[in-house]
Length: 200
Image 1: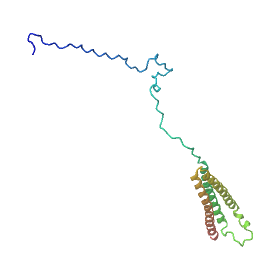
Image 2: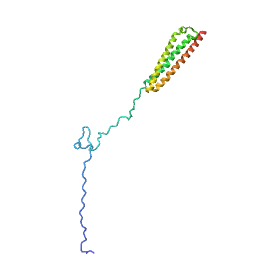
Image 3: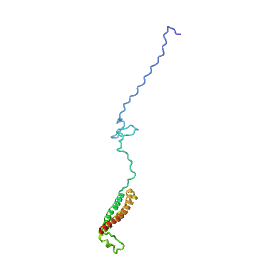
Image 4: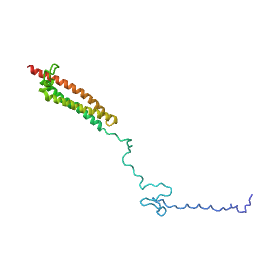
């Protein structure tokens, strides 16, 4: 029990807590470090140590879209096309020439050539021009057809227009068949026309 005449006890005084020190002031970051701190090569700003060197403005985007290069250049198809053109000429032109010539031969010689004739060449003398054209068309078709077949085989083997080379072989073979069909048909038609004229 305390004496009422005594002053109330005073709590012990503690020193006030010291204020925390203020954080050090840092300069605001700038876009580029000071030139004196990091020497930079000419034309590019310097980067801090350990940083990747990136050109100003970033890397340029590649122009156009990415395309994988061809593994090997594609072979030329000229050889196959040439073979196909030759086979078409060998099939069409000689057939037209022999058709016209054979029709005229049949019209001039309606009786035709028989095995009992002693001199066959003298029998053909009235149509010697037409016979010459028919023979020339035969040799023209033969030469062009053989050339088309050879070039077609080379084109197929070397893969230089393989599809055209195959087509050239087919057309050249069919051209020979077409030639003889036209020859026989035109000769028969010309003989029928000449026989009708001869008997009338």
